[in-house]
Structures are given as C-alpha cells and as structure tokens.
Length: 91
Image 1 (tube, rainbow, N blue to C red):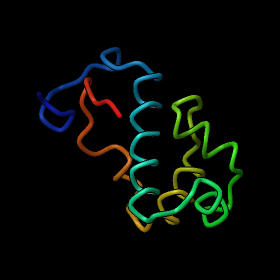
Image 2 (image 1 turned 30 degrees about the vertical axis):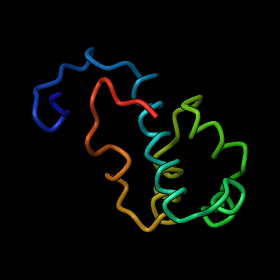
Image 3 (image 1 turned 180 degrees about the vertical axis):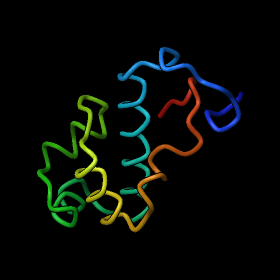
Image 4 (image 1 turned 30 degrees about the horizontal axis):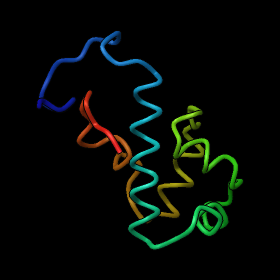
C-alpha cells in the first residue's frame, strides 16, 4: 500500500475524519510506548484528560499547540504523528 510520502495526494483524497483518526492512533501508540496511562500522559503534556481521550479516539482535531505539547511529552517530533500514513491504517 502506498503511503502519503509515496504518492501525490489531492486535498480531497483524505477526509479530516481520516486524519483525526490516524493522528489519534499515533498519539495512543506514543503514549503506550512510554507505558503511561492517559491521565499520566495528559499531566505530562499539560492538557486535559478529556482532550487526550478525544484525540486518541479521533473525535477532535487537535490544534498545532496541542500536538506540540503531545509530541514534547512523548519525546518525538510532531511529524511522528503523521508518518507512514495510509488510507487503510487501523488501530
């Protein structure tokens, strides 16, 4: 399966729901890699537990500021939440 890096993607190819879902999966993966609960991760990132939950479940579009906080808390570059993106990525 081709990744976003491998193909020219028009702006209408992927919905915002797709992007929110994939970013949420990447955030969850980063948190789990650290062995943190959502509450612990939220505290480190200095955002609410409810926001972490909504992001991980693909229910909201996080701001750049929020993504920056999450990336810092996870010790990863913000681009880690977007790498390897494919249309059929599932949790």
